[in-house]
Length: 376
Image (cartoon, rainbow, N blue to C red; front, top):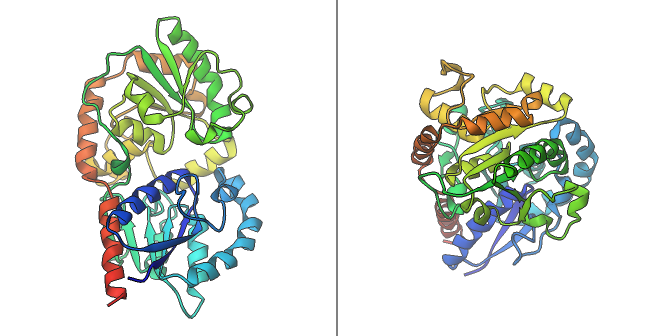
């Protein structure tokens, strides 16, 4: 069988982890393929990317403005690479990927275009749903409710949630442990915004006999941690998220995928997040959600159909959220002391049942079916 050529555009670290899981299943099916495009070779080491994704990663609305010249220089080169492939797989990062797809579509010959891990049109920029329905051949949704936000004739299918492929366990009761995890994010700006508060809280908990664990991304192992975190002597450092959390009874986590991970793993969680003031107020104006934690958001859709139907929009459905000035030592400490563990584990089970399954197997099956049709 002739190897199939797959172009990938995966910028975010989490998207690359999901890509690795997908390719692992694809290899099990013994389908020969080559990979090119933009992806993280540290996460997907068996293939050579054309661009390093870290050069395109930014945070916040202001950061996107700085990215534009760099993207424009690379866009046509990436489009030419994709045009010579059979399949083009786009993952997350819609501000980057939608213009790239539109450029690819201008060529007379285009690959089969698939979008996996769709933009959050249910939160903001709903017009992107119409755009994606027009420029993509397939959309692979990772949330059961996404189909409600796209035109009726959109080729969208729910494939499962990729985090359910990644998590190796899910606890059903509180751990008997003195270890408490702190996860201040993976971007320097996030870390530096949260860490002073996390350090003060860690000292307070350490004085009560707890062991504060600072979970550092694996990709930071070769970096100067002092330049990123400063003094970390109050913490025990750990570079493996899942192994570290398995030993912890609680976690204080920066917003993002990490809060969903800790929740699905069964680690009682408190979300804390501080953004640049301008970014925060722009987001508050544009985003149509009651919460920022993914677990809270998904359970709200599952329970009420949409955020606007929630009769208690100030009460998170599974874990507390503290934003901006509310992120302070005593507030987080009091929330930890009065945490409702029974509610957390009950809601965590509902979340697992709602998401149902991982996505790697069904995505790989979709790719295999397309390849078989292509090579008939």
